[in-house]
Length: 120
Length: 388
Image 1: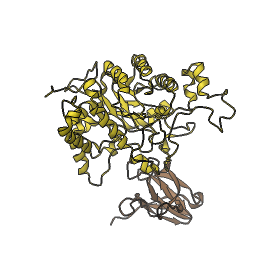
Image 2: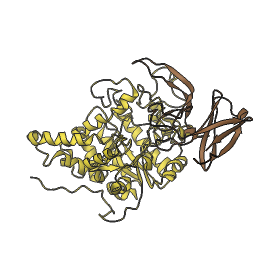
Image 3: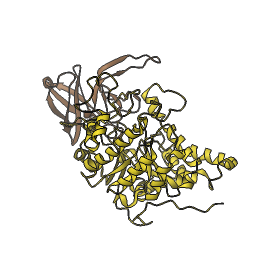
Image 4: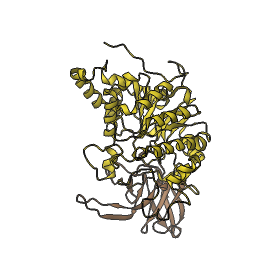
């Protein structure tokens, strides 16, 4: 197993909850987001047709429910692709419609001495 | 029985069989939008029509509250949770998707290597829903002038549809004859109404189209199943956008069956039709059912001298977007084989709509041997010299 590299992408205090920024890591555009105090990172490319997720929307979604009822939840955790609307849970990277098989390309993130470090 | 027909060619075609197609990608479905709604058409409407349409400072004081000015019939019942447009098509200073020709040229044509794009305004898809044939005809003519000045003049890669109002075929014919003389127009677009395409109501339009060697087109109408004057939705009233949108293909199938069985392609052997954004994977079933029924029932429609499917393969084309995404890739090859995709499929993106197809990613499983035909070859043949 090769050693992972890491890159500091910014100060944690500069990325408040609900915010998302993009940066270039190893030649690829990556999204870094703060979800309620938890930092996540994923490649800024939708696995469907390659759209830029950073140009989509962040919100919640409608949770599984009985027919004709709605229950909104996961607010702030879902990023939605600007093209065909695919929803991804940013915390796990999994696509909401097919969590087992469709996912974002995610990176491990740690906060060290107030710096956000993305491991790649 | 019956003589073998050749696929009708575009007039003035310079594409001989075997000659090199001068393009790599032809996008057969792009939707420019007005910047300011119907106000964009004001320069192209007479004083009388400006007052009738009622947009502008003279519009009635109550227009915000009551029915006192016209809007073109649109989808007012089924709301796309994603928003119906690609979210990345707006930017600083440009608040309406596909309203700025240079921005579209960059984001669509340059970015995806598209050599020619066929344009139809996204704002007038529901024109067929208007009960006033003169209003519809005036708006159609204004659209064509707007398209020529705002878009076709802006970039050599843009081509346009001649929008006509199907409510009044003689006015439509006059508009076709006027606009066909202008450069850049490649097809005649017919918004659907509550009559299937085989209806003799349309024949003056078909006669003009085939006489000029220009194909006709149809497209989802935004008003399908929503207005009584537009095409009805099969079976009843859908509830959800997902339901409504995914079921629109059946309206195309019904219209295809109608235009074939009514002998339109026998009456107008030069007529060609493109069904835009109506799907294509339903074609095998329609062709098999039609052919099977015809074998026993042909005496009811004896003007068909050949199996119905042959008319489809020779006279009709289908755009690729939204492309199919079966979980087994080999099913894409199978469908392409069943429908003779090398003859009938033409690439499209449907930019700027939400279900836009990236030409590389969406068509990744189309058999390599036919991909050049799908991306440009078939459209180059279909549109002929008007594309150049």
